[in-house]
Length: 282
Image (tube, rainbow, N blue to C red):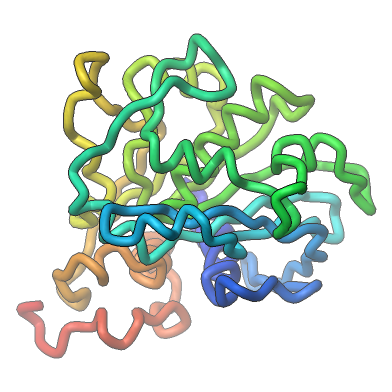
């Protein structure tokens, strides 16, 4: 694992999480990589309906800013998608219904909440906007596209997993890379098998104490079990990280633990204040 590259993409996802859902990202971003600064131009913002839950079903009617498409000065393109606070409510819904994969008939089943959000992804807030997939396929990039990388956290990790396979199957972008952080299981065994074959350049980074990465773990209404895509790298939390659901899942915890794996200065990758333990026992 190239931990510094993984941290770079996590920082891009963090940039999406820093944007309020009713606003859009700045037109330019600068993100560090190996001691240098990489400058990105944001070419499009990504919108979607938020993840509806039993408690907040009205979320499916809300259009929120959820990510961006950007290109750096070397021609590398990144699609970054954030998570949602609704993921914690989703954990308690305990339904996790399965639906047929909406863009590939032989790719098994995917979780219906994630699938509903995925099919709402678009680059304009209005409902008349084209789907994100169509927009990416036809987007005019300032520079020739050198590479395409998708990255996401939490719900965003599930969405980029769906987007990666959709792109690989239905567009010219066959050679893409995916980094996801704290991802729940997105589809069933058949979905995972097809995904692993068609999107081999995948890095699924998981904190084993992050409950979100362990669900759904129920049967798919007789159709099989939910299963993670492969290429999993497991982080090891240390005693300085509070053993709490919100902290274990927070993206600052992921970047902090990756920095530890990379041997970087942890002071430069601080935990969110409430995720820090005040004593050695944690």
